[in-house]
Amino acid sequence: MFNTSHIEISRSAYKSNIRYLKKIIGKEARLSSVIKGNAYGHGVENILPLGEEAGIDHFSVFSANEALDAFKVKKPETRLMIMGHIEDPELEWAVDNEVEFYVFDMGRLEKAIEVAKRTGKKAHIHIEAETGFHRTGFEYEKLPELVQFLKANHDHCVFEGLCTHYAGAESLANYLRVKNQITLYRKFYRYFMRHELFPRYRHTAGSAAALTYPNTIMDMVRFGIAQYGFWPSPETQMFRFKKESVPDHSLKRTLSWKSRVMVVKEVEAGQFVGYGSSYLANKRIRIAVIPVGYSNGFSRSLSNTGRVLIRGRRVPVIGTVTMNTMTVNVSDVPGVEKGDEVVMIGSQKRMSISIASFCEMSNQLNYQLLTRIPADIPRVIVN
Ligand SMILES: *Cc1c(COP(=O)(O)O)cnc(C)c1O
Image 1 (cartoon, rainbow, N blue to C red):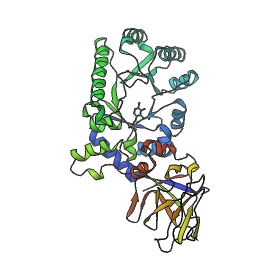
Image 2 (cartoon, rainbow, N blue to C red; image 1 turned 60 degrees about the vertical axis):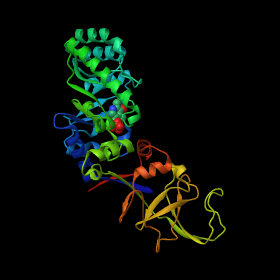
Image 3 (cartoon, rainbow, N blue to C red; image 1 turned 90 degrees about the horizontal axis):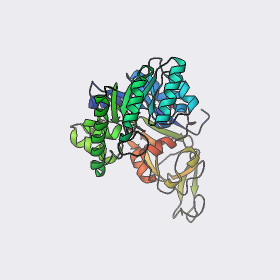
Image 4 (cartoon, helix red, strand yellow; image 1 turned 120 degrees about the vertical axis):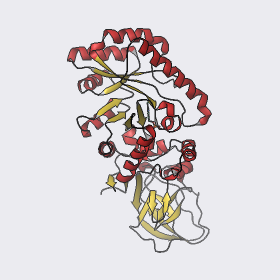
């Protein structure tokens, strides 16, 4: 396979997650699958077709280059939405190919309308409201100018959506901030209504908001992390746990990450393992070397703390994780040999290493760890 590890993506887990999320948002709301960051490390070329198989007809990305990757694999009728960065020449491409995009300043809107007029195509726009995240979005005070411009150019655009993004819906500590954002969003919406501009979709929620604040679901939800089977935060998981009778099977991990043992050998008592002196063998031990290191996405902070599975047993990483290898202690696992399967994330026999525990050990968020798995590690879809 020309690589030292590979990733398996479970079709059945992915579909089960989509069924679960659709149940939560109800029949009326559309599900947009967020596939930025190479589909949270899963690979756009894997997830987009799986999503289409599961009935998803709308996908969201951050930038135009990500949209182009998605454009190459999607069905013609599947819709794409860019939520963030677009350069001017890319805007032409987006309008020409009916790719939807966020508009959060007059400059982009004017440019989009100019392109639309020139090409005879309509710009499919989502107006982003600044409600308190303080990243992108129109300030409420800008609305008179915005609305006037939209009315004047009504024929050259489709008002696809009115949207915003919540700052901190993953933790109850931000309850008030989120509540204020919902209130301000409604004020934006009423302003557009008063001026008879009706967005096709009101959408504000990502995974955390949709899972914990039902009133943020509206006409569409932009699901990222949850569709891949990961909770936005332990709090979100607890919230659903309390709400549902059979909660634990609600989200299923879609991704497993595996490698093979490269070398097995013995180390005498009194010897150090790896660079420096962070691990001292205090008795004779058996070690296995695995060809995955920090350049392959296995964080160096997992030195002396990480765990992997071999022969259905959890074994500890000893010494420092190097650029291309890690070493584990297999003294307690009989018969380990070169070529044995190693699981960094996923299950083996009855044991499993969840990404959540993995993240706690390495002090990383789910999001960060997933997107740091290098894109060149082969991904295969399994059932
Ligand atoms: C990333 C992102 C999402 C998805 O967030 P998750 O927490 O992964 O569900 C939704 N909306 C916007 C604007 C985003 O940037």
